[in-house]
Image (cartoon, rainbow, N blue to C red; front, side, top):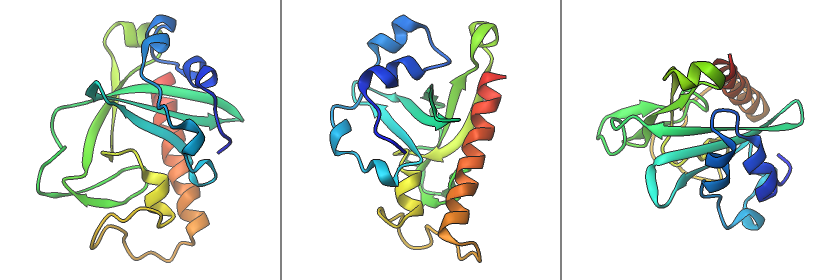
Length: 163
């Protein structure tokens, strides 16, 4: 993924108002992020840990969504799997809910996805971050195929948000 500026990130959000996008907490360490290893930029708001944000490139255009933790998932001792990268964690997967874009979102409609709590799917896929024993399933797919699958899963989720 190419590096994004704060301005590009704020302009990318499809499921919040321009005012909300202007006020959201953008990571201060954008220059230090491992952009070459990221399929999407994901982060939690340090002032409101139940809020999370995700920005990716679709058709070479930044698309961002705001997410909220459902309240369940985080910190639980059972093993769960991220539906984007298929990494398993003990207590490290949360149901994140995104308001739908447009009128549907204004009416309270939302879409949920089980994701890695720290939104570091890209780093788990590439072995840059360790999910612990049993975190990565044995598969016959190449790393490139796993990365492509994660991109497909992410695009399908974003299509539901913007539908």
